[in-house]
Image 1 (cartoon, one colour):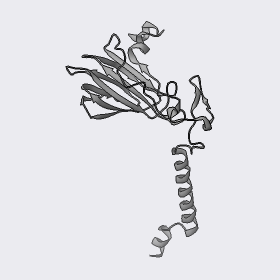
Image 2 (cartoon, one colour; image 1 turned 60 degrees about the horizontal axis):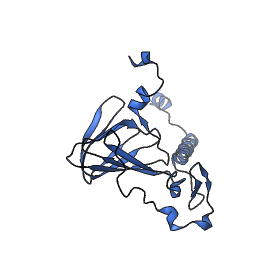
Image 3 (tube, one colour; image 1 turned 90 degrees about the vertical axis):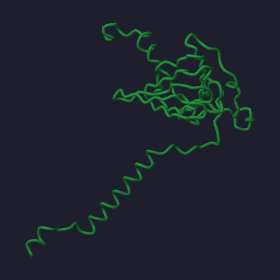
Image 4 (tube, rainbow, N blue to C red; image 1 turned 60 degrees about the vertical axis):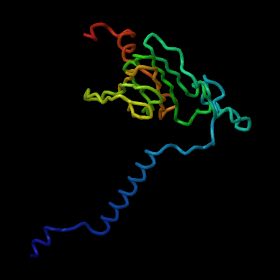
Length: 202
């Protein structure tokens, strides 16, 4: 019995207390690193599209700085039967420093938003009108796709995704991003419209 007690020893209270303090300290650090920075101003309306780091004097702000009407109507359809209008601080200075942006995407019958991704944002897509085949491809090349109907929502991570109007009338998606500058890389343009050497595409 005495031998068993010597073999099975438990850490002292001092060591347990030190481990507990270390765990609490590590959780605190993780919490701080994972949270958004505290805002230091109510808002920072960009002075101009080319310099979004410079804020307009807040005493001159009006309600017009916080509203935008540029996406009330569909845009002009392109060759693919698709039109998109971005809402970011370049066109809506009130979004500056808020970490969000928006897009309106309109599709003619058969219109396609080719495979693309936003390198700096996750997108939440809301089907406002029509029937839109929408989906994304994960890193194991598995496709997650379905037809979205009016009122349905789909989340599109920072992965390659796509949309196509499969209805018999126009369709519209409203997308929100968790970045004021989500970026856009269309796969066909990135691969075939760049200076990548042809040997790399075999």
